[in-house]
Amino acid sequence: MLPIITDLALLRQPCAWVLAETPIDNLVRDLFRELQEHGAQGLSANQIGPHLRVFVMAMNEQPPICLVNPVILKAKGHQTFEEGCLSLPDQFYVVTRAMMVVIRGEDQHRQAVKLRFSGPGARTALHEYDHLGGRLTIDVGKPLTGPRPQRVRANPPSLMWGNPKLPDRNP
Image 1 (cartoon, one colour):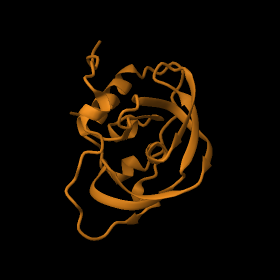
Image 2: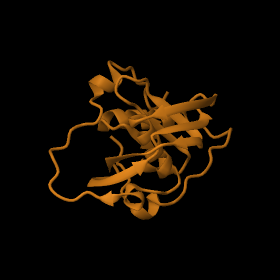
Image 3: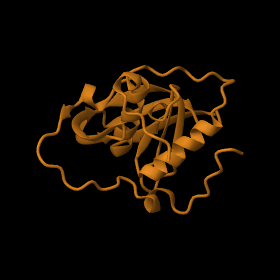
Image 4: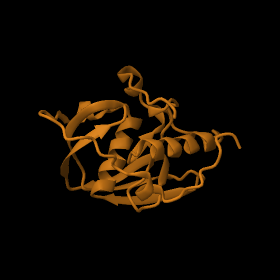
């Protein structure tokens, strides 16, 4: 398991655009592996090291998604929920985000994609998108006070991945 970066100064640095010639296969493989191992819904490249505009997400039974150089085209509505973050362990914030978002970018194969997310998917995509700009839940939310229930994995690997065959880190 790779360490998750918790240094706020590093996390607040905006990520660089990924150039066409930049190899990302190993990064994407590491992101998906860490997402699975942590049972998280989303993970951005800068949370494991490289400051590149790449994030991955997996929402229960939906196929895992990778977005490279994402750009928000449209956001509508609002939803307010509690959010946590792997980079801010044991901290939770009440955050208002768009209810629906349309994002364009590239997938892990560098093919152009345009994706629409709503509800929890929009919330996760926007949370990860914020990471790429150096914004954290502590910057956009209000601290949740009071006792917290026992932590439950957001996406147990059995729900999120089935029986994956993840490629080796070094092909």
